[in-house]
Length: 243
Image 1: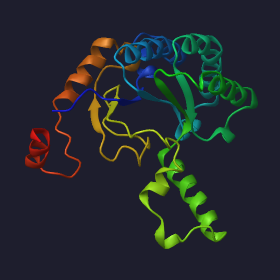
Image 2 (image 1 turned 90 degrees about the horizontal axis):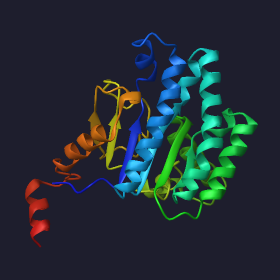
Image 3 (image 1 turned 45 degrees about the vertical axis):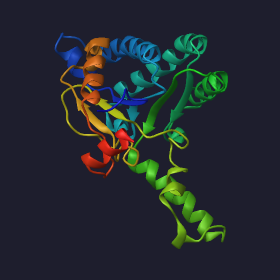
């Protein structure tokens, strides 16, 4: 059976539905979600998870109503202002992945400042995906390789998976062991398309503002029952364990 996951990725879904079920505007769900993020980051740190990647805002979320997008960006900026000092104090290393060119200048500067402040911290590596899409991620990696090939620095026929991986947003970080999606949907919604190739997928009906350490434990229990073969047979896994 699998050990505890070292890299956990989460699609935080269900904020709007949580708010609507309580007769509140969707924005109330997004505000409630910030408290849950704080709680789950702390929980993962206590559990010695090495990396946590959170899907905060997808490239497709720009299609939402402009007022909701504006509120989301404002909440994100406010959270950065409020939370970074605590993250730094708790030795969390913060990194943002996504298309920053689509973001406003103040937000981009706050993101850079937060990354610089926490860059040498030895604790949990927290990756926050903002304006991120898996297809965008693979496309920008391919563009980088194509430019090198066009400049004569790379033989296109010799491009490897490792070279592609080195140009993706999560370069230098092991692929997620476990993906958790809240809110009841069972799809990955253009998240980390390359990196989720052998990730265990866990779906829960709990809406993100309801997600608790107990829900996280249930996901970890599920992961612990999985046999991670990576293309090998069960017999091969067993013989390796006995060696």
